[in-house]
Length: 336
Length: 273
Image 1 (cartoon, chains in turn red, blue):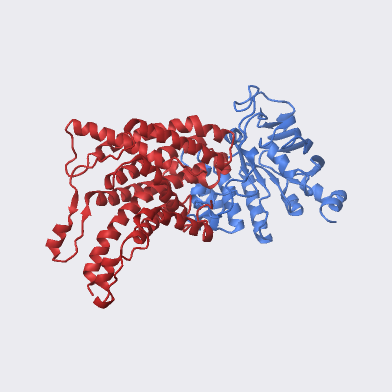
Image 2: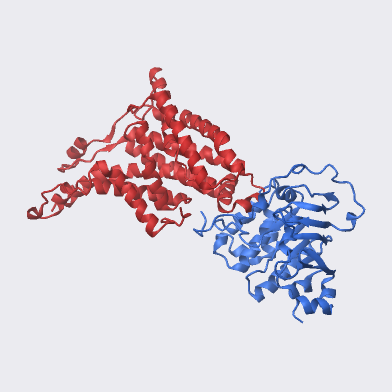
């Protein structure tokens, strides 16, 4: 029995990575849920919006690095973030004016919006691949670790090491700040309240003089910001590859639906539920079990439920379970 | 953000968001010119004919309200009571007739533009933002106003004291009667000249209904004209300055509330003896 080492191993391989991944998913799911709550459709282009924003950040980061500008121990990408957000806002507003606005005017059914967003997804997909290519890009610089496994072992004298990467801390801190700012905006500002009112009852909002086009514009701007930040944090933590971002759509939608579509609080909870289950199910528990169980009961197998290649199956599984047994999600959002 | 998962949002009445038809949107150029016939009433929907689709529901229907008075529309089910009021508010296209408010013809304006002209409408259902707190509901009612809305909120709380106690609570958690108070309060936040209520007492208990009617009288005393559709014809006519009995989309009887209550013909046909 070695609880302390088990706990450290668990933190190193499950808790810390899942916390960071969960925060990234939560930011992505917040964007999806806002679009669903206010524009009333599932935005399939969200993953590629993230990719587009990240791409601009990468290009600007390269530019900054070329000029010899850095951000000390923090990644230079943080300095490039505002440019990425601005670029993404411009892009989504262009798509809104040219594509979605028409369908709003003819009051199209939600499924038509979804199909339109699928088209937008392919276009964004093409734009990103055309500009930056399909290959993997690393744009992380600055300090790599807050504490490395070796330092931790030397410090504590434990057998197991706990590595905490800069990007993981950065992800969680940034996500917390952004979520707090978003909730403050939605709860206490006139514009934020009008967005909630519009999401709640469109017709009554119109009768109150709330301008729907204004609400839609603010929503896209916030969503573009959220998507870019989520994409950059994910890219810093792992790496940037257009196809991976497209695939992120699945866990993000799973998170938004688990939490309850249209509920911002649910999106955050959903993000962590999906992240922890994905990593928990694909982690080989042998090490932790060996520390915890008596020596004669130590497992001989890896104790891994699913290979990491199947991690998307976890998102799918959660999605199906939720849709079967609680279609409104944890926080009672809108059913799908 | 909605509490009822399977409901859509809004009241599914597409006419409510009718964007202005040709000629609409911009205030009528004739606006402001006094009309001798219309000058007699604060609001007049004159000879309105029209419906949602190809068939007409309203036939030459006329409704009028004077300043600070209460007008009540009653009639059997399917008589076109709500339709008549929606016509006044611009939620359906008229094939004939016109609507005059305070000396301005507003027939071609969209509902939103009519709100800016001083009309306020309380739909029968889905008339509050269920996920917003009571106070936020009131704030949203005053969205168009740029001046200080605190005094108006205080006035609404004075009129409906229960709302002050519940101001932090989501409107969706309130009882039916309290929701109606929020709905009326939200409409009052625009400081309207005309308040239109579509069956404000639908689904509330008789005690709450009496209380709501008392409040409506109080609102009228502040100089706001009230046009109201009611199922509870007898109680509504008791507080009405003018009563309109509609049958099949046309005016059957028009008189003061008391006179209609006393009319044996009206009593026999509509009030159950």
